[in-house]
Length: 184
Length: 71
Image 1 (cartoon, chains in turn green, purple):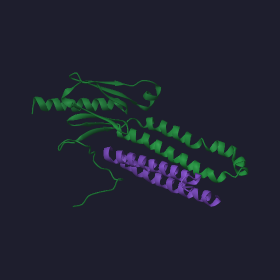
Image 2: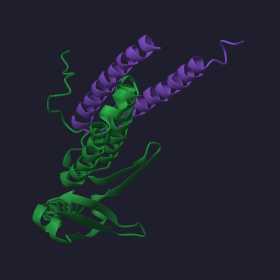
Image 3: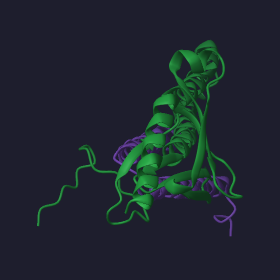
Image 4: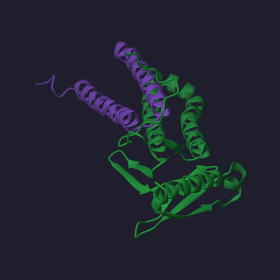
């Protein structure tokens, strides 16, 4: 039995609760620009301690405390690295999965707060795309709202790339799913 | 008795506790990325995160050598 354990090769999207004959049609994260803004923020924080260090370098040498600087600097970078990857974790675990049978909205709010919502494709009533503002228009990302038949709240895909293409694809899947019910 | 309350001992214990919390945090992030991540991207991120954390921790430990030597 051969199996591929490489994390650098492409693999099919497998998730907890995936059914045997279920195929993932759409898999979405938020648009990359959301993460890019956070990267920029953390990059600024990373350069921030270097400014006073350069300004007060001579003073630190004179008072013979320069040997403590690498320790505190590295400690600061360790904490920053952890905080940054906490943001990366939240970004990567906030996903929307559309299969040939259902829609899954997975929200990771913090370490120990995770919500998984599911909607059968046959219960989809209508889909709305909201793209607001200059940045969203230029980079083609926005919200996709899915209204279901019933008292359930709307499903909202937040700040996803190519929302109109996503909407069209989901509508096509919904049509196919409803056709299967009428003509099994 | 004197050894238990020395400044160096207290600082060492505090640093050890902070490092333990740091590695606990690393473990929790890695666990979430590997357990709940879908596709290869979360796993790649987990690898990069662990490698970076380990390297930073190693450099931090090395940076304590001049402090210990000087004191």
